[in-house]
View 1 (cartoon, rainbow, N blue to C red):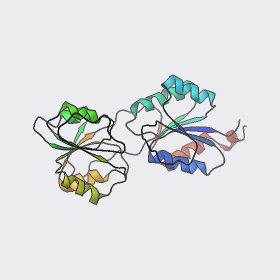
View 2: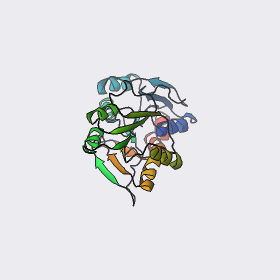
View 3: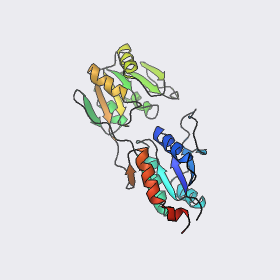
View 4: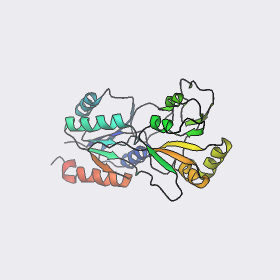
Length: 256
């Protein structure tokens, strides 16, 4: 057996940090796969492939042909389809899989959260009266705002929302985290926001909007995560590295 080959399904800061940690080692080969939804992805420390696989069966074929020994799902916590496909593909290819998932944000004293199952459900929960909404879920799903055109929407995303929404009262902000509490408070005040729609993505990079909402007394429609596929889950890069070391023992690396 040669050096273990690891496929990381990425797109998150955790995926990049894990790839960075593995890149300096000489005991494994790593390929980082990105979906290609971001127009200008950040530079990565390991070889990268761009684009989807075409479903669970195609991903399983990729794993088998490439003789990968481990699949790491470090995609966004709301990338539900690819996570489901990854679990199926790993089982089909008879290799272990690990999901690297940052912990969810927890409700704190002063938070005004209403938990919902989807962006569409969050928009429906806004009610019939016009409100000023910060739709902070990225461009994926932004079109759901068209179902309730009576509201004002501030939409922030890394890449432009295309096509533009058919709404009379909408503003767009192109920006990439991390965001500071001061900037988030300024943004919310400037646009007179009275409700935020956010996904419970976890992590520190975009948490400032939740802190700002708490400070300013703004309601948050919090989209909760769906149930995760049945694979081993770790919450930190450090825990992922421990799991990798456990899977690829020295005996396995020597081909014993």
